[in-house]
Length: 537
Image (cartoon, rainbow, N blue to C red):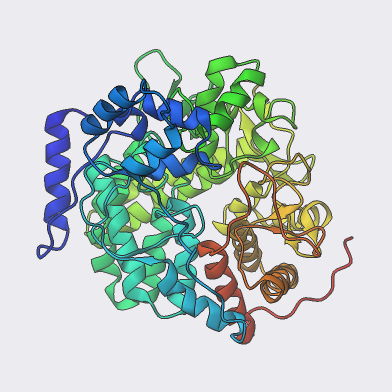
């Protein structure tokens, strides 16, 4: 982003935000850029068990001053790197580290009390740390995730709406609009080291959720956020240069069909997972080229899953940039329809028709390239191999959620879902066990909700209710045992919690709280029953 554009976007964001509060500074330099040499030394030395900790540390003085001290002290006898870091940096605590569960509370009361624990007030300008200050209050996921996260926040908002915290939900949407207007997209999270990528584009769903909470204000809401919706769309739809078939997120297939993939602009190890990425690169046939694949996997939110692996089992064979994910394209289909709706509200029927037409074309492409009649399920498409990928995964349920699947497809998908994905604690993300956290035996709140709501859209209430019942029972069982609501759960063996991946299972936890509260309220209202004990095991 050049200097003029940076100033312009920053000025636009300031005008859109509250006038009574000074706006945070626009920041783009990450810790690796601010502390060259020192950053790599600290991460390699493993001063902290979690690579993310140092990436989140804020220096007590300017980076130049810290680097000057480092250059002077590092050659002195008895120099200790850990002592230096703790002297010159503020080390963050986990988001929920000071919270103690009241075990006398039921799970609903526990979730209601957690909103204040996970809530953050507007940030003050932090010139030197990696945190990107946000102008309005927001909710963090919990544990090591001390900042707001993009797609997590939609599922958190489901619970905020159930709790009647509409103002907080709207504040979070304002923050995301601020990020779009400032940077041209919503980063993975509000950290400078996330500015090379986004996450699954849920902003339109957030705006629609706000509309559902304030139906009398639909026109005002849609027109207020139209510019942000359209700017995010432009981020995903950036056109390739002449003669190329791909440009970052946009792929043009041989028949001129345009669909989208995930894509991170970075080609170096993730700063929050520095050591882990270097270890993976040493084992990978792609060598340093694997860094972009790993970073892109983080943009997908599924970091990591055999869904993205060439050999179906090993992280070092990740090739996500070759893959057109069905769920991403369903989300962009919804974004196109939401923009069309907003233009209708403004009375611009020509623009509305253009976006409706784009959505229709995308829907046809999803049906053509991602529907697999052999297995009766939607699959991702490998555009380099020109065939669907081998791994069944719950991303295939997004056409249910957005009403893209046809009636016959819905019937076969329901059978596949029961046979391949359903276990005593809910749905696995994929049927395969690889040791990665987005594979079996783990289940995740966002994917349970996308499947449950999608099934309800096609009147598959019996299966939606069964999944909801199994998932909520597992959440509550672990809560009663541990006093915690977790990031993910073992849904195959309900005597265990969940694990796998790069870091321990986290508690808090924003999207688990939101989805569970939504499910429990729907059960209380009779919109979901307690399941019918489907024997699929």
